Image (cartoon, rainbow, N blue to C red; front, side, top):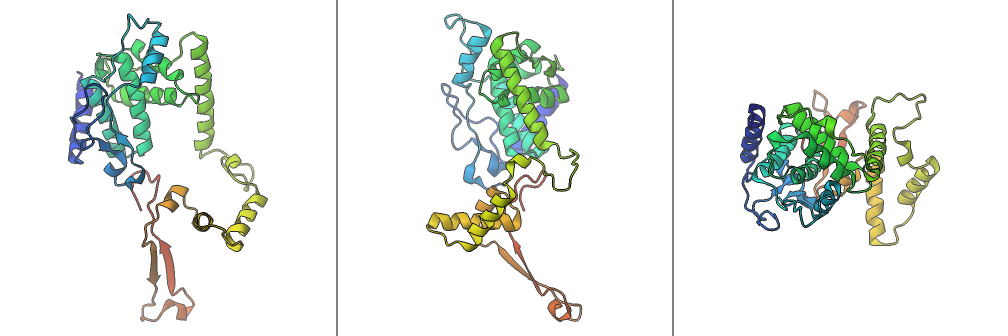
Length: 315
């Protein structure tokens, strides 16, 4: 184990333990399922509402990945039995990556979960080789397994990102840089998968390019996601003037009204707490109401659980 990896692992371990998480949880030696009392609830760990909890709850390799590995490696089932469980070193690496993403980098839970999924694929291809000795051929094999998994190319993108931001950026493997080996084999299926990855990168690049220049003031980023002007005003007319026909309609109308008036995300609207309204009174220095002097006497604010706040965990 090199010193870079040892330092990176120790920082992650101490941080996770300090957050009250179990570093060596008990798990089923057949299925890899972690004991319910010791699994990691990622939303709860960073102070987010646990209504849709994301768990780190399994140290097993996915059956789908095992079948794809046999296909990619062209290894007959009788001669090749990939491990069904992650080795101890890779289990620690999985936990350490989550700890770094959530508590040290303070990234989103979805980022940590995406990295964890990719790490399980890399672990499968590495076998008993520890993370600090991950070889380029194992990384490339894992990348090609990811290329065949799913129709979007997202897993392969995430796997390449793990190689770049975890292994290479922190010098974790003796064989870094590894990201250059996240490339397809010369097979039709692998090249088709790489084409899907390229399309996915193009879509995400357009979506997240906040510095893209606009030639007109009325241009909007990802305008294809927005309704037409006529459709938007028809929606406004419906929710503010029509009478809801059912209880479900009433809930939908209320949600849409809040989104129109506040601009909150749908996830923020549906998680608004019960006692969410806050009134604030304003007074002049002489104690009179600000409204008597031409100002505002009161303001109304809305408490909610904010999403995508970077270093913040709520608002």
